[in-house]
Length: 369
Image (cartoon, rainbow, N blue to C red; front, top):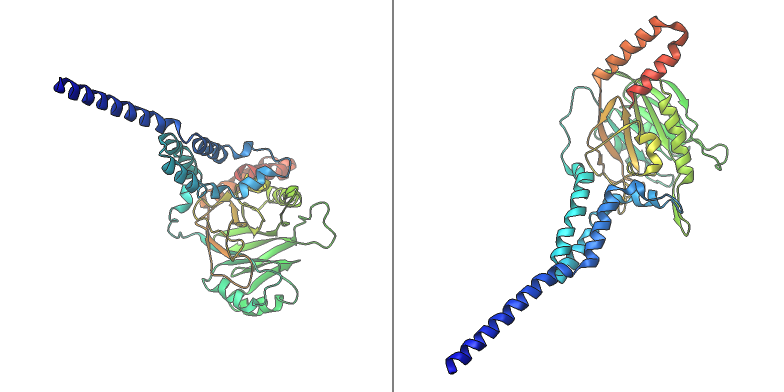
């Protein structure tokens, strides 16, 4: 009797343990549904952010301005999954991790080695309240770049930049509040009208010039698009978007084959508001180079883009007296593309003089995509 009782108790204990284990195993799949749902939503936003409507309040652009930060946002979800001991939530996190890695993982990789046809460029919004223009100029010129693009140049500070950069950069052009300093000769400089509707006359933030490099002519654009404001109505980016469309049209009509665009564009390369530019220009796939605000950088709104050239790794330079950090990149010119363009232009001109201009423009536009 005692043995049967002990055996029965043991059997009962084993049954309860097995039942508890099965309940625990099933519970791990049932718990953590909210973190799992949020992880799935994050993955969808990373992959299909263009599906988020831009009205009201330019919500799509607001999301895209800070899209890379969805990666660090996964840390609270991971913490919740661990605390809840939820296998469902843990496995769901693989979706946004894969989506973020696909979208931004390449930015963490090292850049390629310097090439023979590289131009080193620096882009910086020097700030209209910068009290250290001389030190700022020295920081920008320290690495010996070929081109230095500046925005928010005020008449009072301009002589300081001109004097400090004159020795190493004998060529420079300024239009309105933007300027370009170059080691190579400049020609054909003109103002580019990127003033959107609703902004007063006298607003001048765009220039175009041709840089005569050792590798051929390069059309360089320097631009400062209007700022965005976040308020009760959402993201106020309409003036910025309108200015980006005007700049995009100017670049599309540019007849010089190789183009470099430098500027404070007040938007990230993921922001749909800059699609008139990003749809036709190469952007870097190496380096985050968060440039604004300088005290705690959250986004790179200072950009280097190019046509018929490849933008290498973008990185930031030491802080200056500005609320932006300077960014620098190597731009590798495309020898093969330039040669193809020359052949296309010659063929078009000799074949049909009456349609030579439209043919050349079509050739250049096709080459930019």
